[in-house]
Structure formats: structure tokens, C-alpha cells
Length: 174
Ligand code: SF4
Image (cartoon, rainbow, N blue to C red):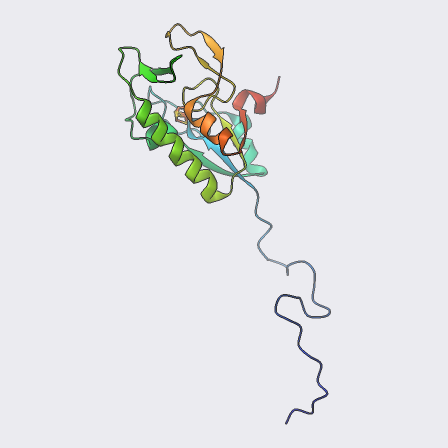
């Protein structure tokens, strides 16, 4: 029979008196923050030539982050390999022979933003100068290897979604 003198149990939202304030030995460590990364920088052979651009400096970020690989161009439905394309001054993305691939780039950008939200990423490391991923600069659309300030289609969408962007050169440093 209850005596009526027992202490009230602590609410479930509060630890009971004397409970440890850290997890027990063997408990899962705190989750590392998610970091969206261009898949080609992590060794995936997904660029237009079917090759990767592996960056040891970016791969080393796995010690501090939960790396989430993304290739917007393949997510947008483009095959690998595929014709090279560049972002044009009018905002379209075209291949050297004039084929318009803007919609695939936009689909890939939407998928990358959805992935960033799903995993809770607030930062991304993206491939420099890519018409999808380049966060600071892109080729100018003339297929002459001329670089201009600007963002690739996915980089712009991720920036609009509030992510902080770096490229592999920022990570590697001078
Ligand atoms: S779309 Fe981005 S991740 Fe995919 S190959 Fe190009 S630069 Fe790499």
C-alpha cells in the first residue's frame, strides 16, 4: 500500500536527482555536423568525362563532419559521361554544340537543396568553377576556359537556402 510519503517522481523531461550529466561509457558520441560535398571531390567518377577530382583536404574533413556526397548533374538526370556545358550570360546552361540543359541543372539544384535540408547541412564544400557546383566563379559560357565571378546553378540555390559555401581550394588553403 502506498504510504503517501514517497517523493514525487521527476517529470520525464528532467533527469532524476543524481543522474549523470553525460552519457554512459559506450554511448554514441555527439553527432558531427552534416557537410554537403560535391561527390567528385570525394572520388566519385561523376564529372562530364566520367572522372573524379579527389581532394585529400576535403576527404580529411570527415574527421569533423558527416560528409554527404551529392552530384547535382547526375541527380538532375544527366548521364555520365556527358557533353561539357557552361553557364551562359543569359542564365541558361548549354553544351558547346548549343544543346540546352538548363532544366536538368535546375532539377539537380532542387534535389541538392532537398538533400541539404534532409540531413540538416548548413555548409557545403563544392567543386570550383563547375557550372553546377562552383561557389565563387564559373567559366563564362564561351568554352574558352575564361573564368568569371559567379555561382553555378546548384551553388546559387544552396546559397539562397542559407548554406555557407566553400570550394576545395578554400579548404586546401594557400
Ligand atoms: S555536378 Fe558537381 S559533383 Fe557532379 S561532377 Fe560536376 S562538379 Fe562534381
